[in-house]
Image (cartoon, rainbow, N blue to C red; front, side, top):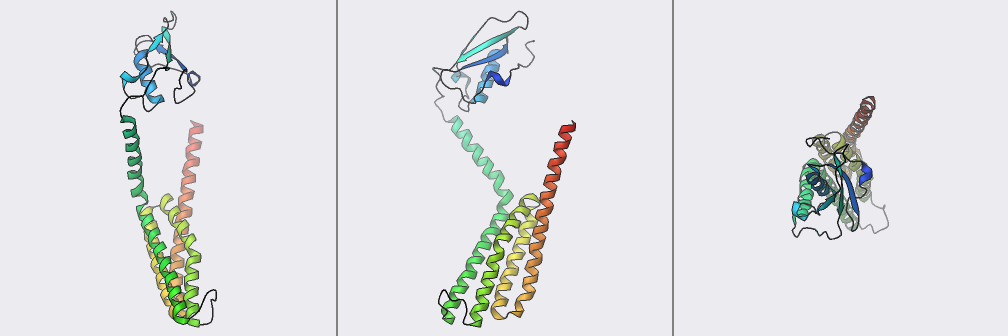
Length: 244
């Protein structure tokens, strides 16, 4: 092995991502570059091993006459982490970076979700006001036709809300966030029209009900297409890897 060639080591040479006290690390190194390579490897073992000055020293045996390699023994009994916050800062930076890259990918879905929750709260408040107006005390759910229509409108919207949330997020993640969020807004608008129309007459609920149902089926279709496309790509990549 020449000094310009990269060093090699087997996974059995080290078994722990953190170097515990008293443990030894056995690594094969080129005689001219093993010191630098050992330091680089240790920085990958532990996030606090960032400065070369903080790394433990190694004691090396004589190089082999055949392979020109040397066995490097490192003992970390007296090692202490560097007295700075570099690792903590890098960890915090990584978390912030992950959040900053994830949030734009789901912000539209999250906005539609919160709007849907607020709409459900509005429907529930309308039922409370209707109970007071028509003097229908809990647990009764009948007695006045006007109250029954408002109660049924709120119940129907609540029954479909979990289905809406599920297909909204699945279609947004696996298909397209913008399209899913737009369909979500249309669905919420259709449900609002449904509630208002049902509160007035049972016949008036049909048009907004068909509209919101159509939007919901679109979200279901986007979810199915997105999941199938994902699995098709995963299977194709696996097959390509096996062929290679």
